Length: 482
Image 1: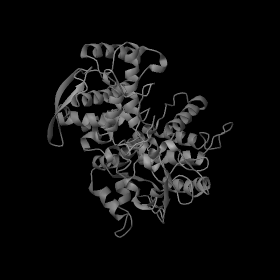
Image 2: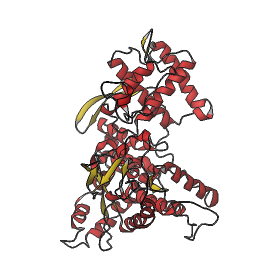
Image 3: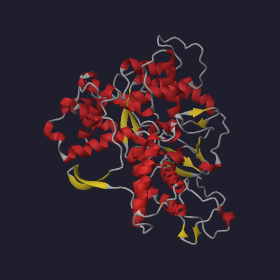
Image 4: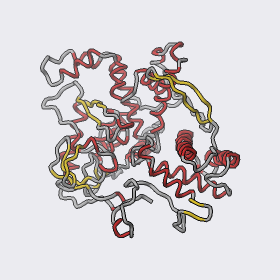
């Protein structure tokens, strides 16, 4: 269940429970927290869950995934008579059986390597917490130790041996080539490959899907970043057409790791996004009576809104301070959701995995059998490759040279002409170092056109291994969006 404190005064409690709003919790069928053996495992899991926000899992979108990973592990163990907090030998034997179940069990239970590795990381986090807090001394995993150096700091890292090996990044194409990217955007807009209107297909919210899909490929935000961007945070359209990209600030409240960064978007893509805002979206939210469901928490009613903030339930708030869970509860002054993407009568829309997958399925069935499955993170990969190709060819630098001093584009033009392409892409993607960006590109590029960016000596350093781990994390966002 998802916790909400709404109505806690009627629960017969003296004080409001100290449980994070929106936390995912689990309960046994008899709703008891203790038995003759003491605190039940479900209650231990709930205590761990309530500490996730201060244990490097601040996003409320991630909490259900963490709790679900432990719950499914508990349920599998219960089916084999093994408890969550039993001895190491029993847990290790259970882990072996669980690995087979998730790899070759019923189709509905099987995990891809990336999903399995995510679940092992989540279980590892739970057991480390349980040991630190005295609930158990047993760990089902075996760890190997390695020493890494990142940003001039040496640290020891543990590698969970239960992780599955994944295919090398260059084995499968992770981005859309230009012709496939064009085909995908036309598919989102309900257009045939030649640009004519697609026949025999009745889709909805085509303007929204086309505008946001193009924005993702043109600016490279992660799924959470564009899904929970507010309509009022979309940059203003420049007064005159310009070839220099427009900066797109991404507030720290929705970025990975809570780090503010700025990417960019071209004029035509931004113009299409503004057309969606002015027409289809404006029609959907006008006079909308939508309010968030009770399970999300209390509605956050907005007044006096501008690009930086507004009054939320009477108090002045900056948008950058709001996380995804709060943003989807915002009710605009004129009605409807504050999110960029809405559906129906002004409701917030977040099901982008489904939109992208359906569009790619339709293209594959109707036009191009080789067309890949497309998830939101593939748009980010596509942006990275397209942008690097333009930076490396000097495309943006040539545009910047045409900008006159004093123009509104002058600051960005100076940046484009005074920084190396790899450094610029590092900033746009939000990577910690240019080395991470190099390795990320190398994993994306099947023809290895960027392989010569690495030296044999550099590949073997601990700092390079740390950058490899950060680059690999980019691919953990694929598919299920955890």
